[in-house]
Image (cartoon, rainbow, N blue to C red):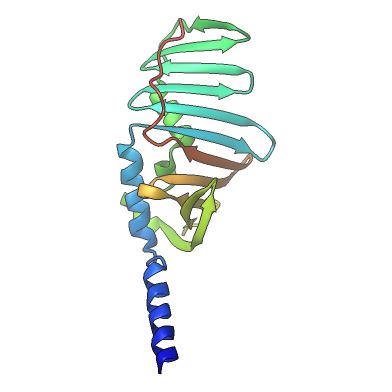
Length: 187
């Protein structure tokens, strides 16, 4: 009898430590809201053909992008470019915020207002770059878009996105949520 009580107690404790069943749609809505309220973030983008890009973002309109040996800073509509060791201010205004956000915006891959356009499935619990995350697959019901895999970590913030596009696969790893230092003019 003592063994039976011990086994029941062990099973009850194990059940309490297991993650709750995921609600994929609600989790994606929570992710979109958490992303929209983030003050800053860092993203590392990698393409299947070996190209890389780093983006630091301080909301609402400060971005520092590193693309190979070139760096670009956007502050509102002002832009700065660095090649080699020299910074140069761009002579024209640039709609920086729309450009940078569209490149690494997880909300762009899933629009909560169009929930019926997608099937969202929970793949499982995984670890991404040391962060515990829930893995989801978002599939367009029309079949016109390739599936997107998304890992959502702590506080409903994205940890990774893998998407297949016309030019190959893109992987975006997120970090430094609300911890990126301010971005200022380099000159």
